Image 1 (cartoon, rainbow, N blue to C red):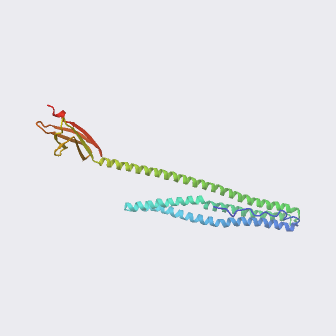
Image 2: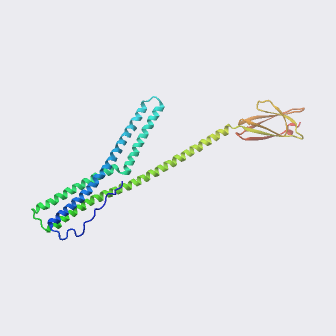
Image 3: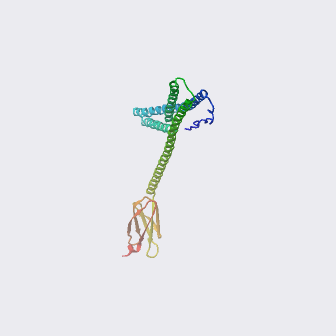
Length: 307
């Protein structure tokens, strides 16, 4: 979170205590140190309010989601319908995911850690302030009220050390904030990288599944596609009439050199050619029909019609 209100107060005018009697200079030194302490503590107490409010709200929602994520799977086990059990289980998983997401948000924005860090720092500042007040009073008591100009430097050094201690506490807290902020940026980068890799893997898996499904469909369609047979009949001289049949179908007369039959199921088929004339002969060939393809074969009648 931004720390725009943290700044170094305006420095004292260099000759503020010049020619000032100790009775006037000492109260000015004391009040200046007290003012510095009040401003810095007031800033932390004011900033604690927003940190505490954000942290408490986040913790409450995390606790609620944890309860939901724990109870819903139990309720899913008590249901009878599979759809209801699945829905309750999914609700439980989603609630746990929201709880984890809120935990990450709290860590990134530093609400809870900032609240504790501010409490620790402002408490240390107030303890330092009380120690300064007691040291100041103890010095005066030791002098039994006999304060002179020689004591001004000693008390000024005491106030200077007090302000240095406050600055040290503020600097340490700021260093912790810088470290947490850097860790938050690193965490966000890691989450983005992890999410990007997860999306890429999911996308690649989806593309692979789609491609596999399409290939399966194509192969299935290819297997289911019918084929065709083209029979080339080589006559000895001029074309003569023959009868052609497929499997158990009745033979049909045909005259020509190229016979085609389409819409045949893939697989082996018995092709029968019956010649006509004085000595009719039956020629049978087993033809393998490929899915969606055209199977070519030929028959030389002269080889079968010779005596």
